[in-house]
Image 1: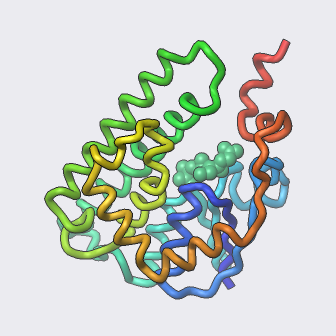
Image 2: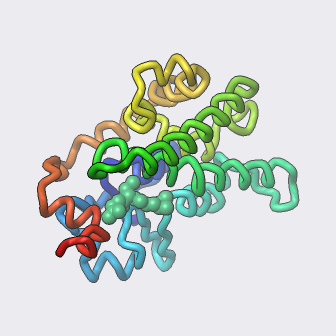
Length: 230
Ligand SMILES: N[C@@H](CCC(=O)N[C@@H](CS)C(=O)NCC(=O)O)C(=O)O
């Protein structure tokens, strides 16, 4: 059976959504990153990058959320244009990588500098907040013209967007985020209403991940800060 290594954060949740949409049976294995479980030798053998999600499917091991989305969609031949030479596949790859390399990392850094970094942080916060806004605005414009990211059919790019869209007000830190991004909100609401998303919500809340951001959690989440300690 597929083993899915996860926590409740955006990147694992988008993979959970696809697993549920596909109706695959899988064993969900919690990895509590605030407790440092991502650094256990057994987990690093699965994902040397020490982050979630990762997936083990028989002899295949896949890490990085968007790689997992593509792997599962290709394997099941669902939620993705399959012909490697087609314009539709090219468009899918472009937007999937746009989410993987832009929306995700810049939203993540925006969260870090807005909510966790010590002062002074104005320069860094401005840089990441500006870029995160830019990426979300591009998604909003895309979704103003298309029902889904690739046109008329729901697929893995929408699921990749959904993972992070759930966090938009936390990422962008302004109360009118959804007024400014109504088309992203429309997609988020539509996906949230799907039975698969309801099952993901049950999974998300089924395990008590460590909630406290105490010194130990900070060490596990932000190991780079050890270099700054006297
Ligand atoms: N590019 C990776 C990023 C994975 C990632 O940063 N995951 C976060 C949770 S969303 C994580 O594991 N954080 C814990 C850590 O950085 O130690 C992906 O898309 O899967």
